[in-house]
Image (cartoon, rainbow, N blue to C red; front, top):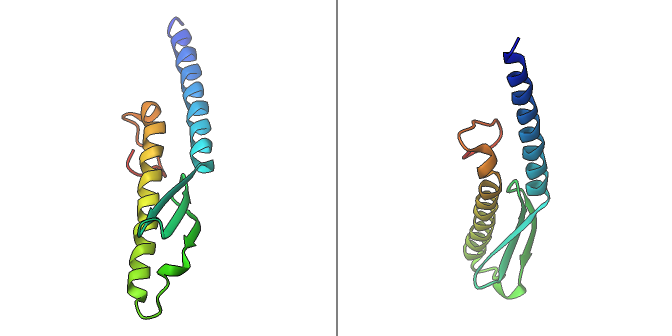
Amino acid sequence: MKGMGNLGNLMKQAKKLQEELEKKQAEIAAMKVEASSGGGMVKATVNGRGELLNLLIEREVVDPDDVEMLIDLLIAAVQEAQKNAQAISQEKLGPLTQGMKLPGMPGL
């Protein structure tokens, strides 16, 4: 039964990796990432999962005659914040998940 010691070590390593991964995922979920567009006139804040938490729109950018511009600025700010959150997530999880296929973790 020599191989059982190796299996025990492997199980300990797997458990440690799982705990580290869960800790990083919690950190990522709690972080807030902000991005802006229109020279800072529109700011979007997302969490580490890319979920929109807040939008700040300066009054000067709200023009009833140019709603399309406001929509473009909103989309740009949200997309940039989401992109930044994904990049930070991948950076934090990368060392732990290299070569692993994890459900619910796009791009990893």
